[in-house]
Length: 275
Image 1 (cartoon, helix red, strand yellow):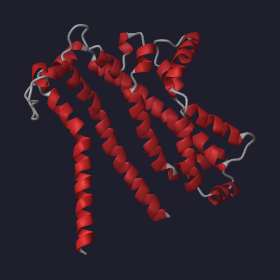
Image 2 (image 1 turned 90 degrees about the vertical axis):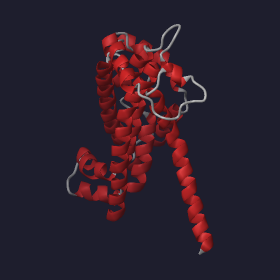
Image 3 (image 1 turned 60 degrees about the horizontal axis):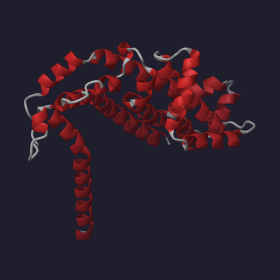
Image 4 (image 1 turned 180 degrees about the vertical axis):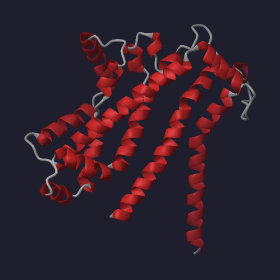
């Protein structure tokens, strides 16, 4: 018994230490957003909150169209996430539960695309967007990102283990077509996988910097990452203002994470009870 207690105590201490280490960067972000640039560079560093938060935020709002960029980013991230969930779940279920010619070769090709660096596709993607006349429009941000190989792979692996083939066969005997099987049988089972994929996709699109920087030419269509990058000066940067803007951009992701994690855990628990 004493040995078990020591192991439990060490486990809890390790978890607490891991939590403190992982949360410190966010704590430091909040602290720096409440300080002036001079205080950020001071030594020893000030580890407690200052009184400049609202002044820094007001200067961010005066320097960039923060709410316009916020709405642009929210629109692009939400649309991309919904499209990825729809198309990736369709493809993932098809790979997992349906047989068709060339299925294995197509899946291997899909996995191969995951191994290529995303930067290699920037120039071809830009040329294609230019041919379509989409440079500078939201379509260039949304359409290329509406399907991704990781999402298909993730849904395929989850569906293969979670969706019983017998359940689909029973649905077919009752006269269900493909989309009825997809909507009424497959999607409810895939909710935990879709919750993770949705959060993963939303965060990726929200934080994307390079592609919007290349493809968006109209300042009124700037996303948050591009708008915040304009706060960096050529000769001097007010880091207190930049960090305050970064804090504002991170807060929606924290809210999303708290909501999705709660939903994800409840879906896992519901699936365990049903099984």
